Length: 100
Image (cartoon, rainbow, N blue to C red; front, side, top):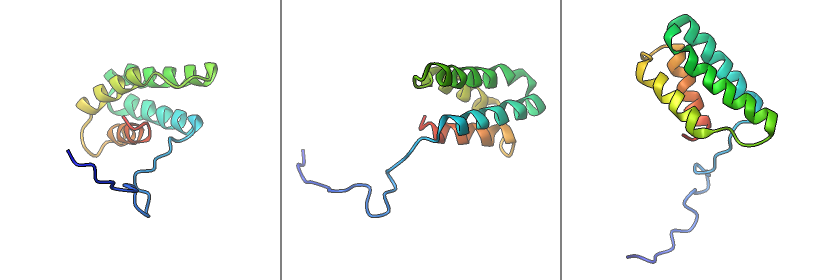
């Protein structure tokens, strides 16, 4: 096992530094995702609503959103959504924003 100190693994560009968008931005993305699901995949609207509910609950109680429920809903959408759809774009955006 090496004990070499790699120093700042983020480097000068700080690629490893990530900040989670504010809750309002996440809620807006979830709203747009649900709208896209209504148009493209009506059978998946409940997954979008689950994400909205979890973010709304977080806003209400001040605690972090339930990442497990959000991840599960996003994975359900990602499996069914076709490439090039707004539903998949918003799903990827939220997965990345929440670092899931």
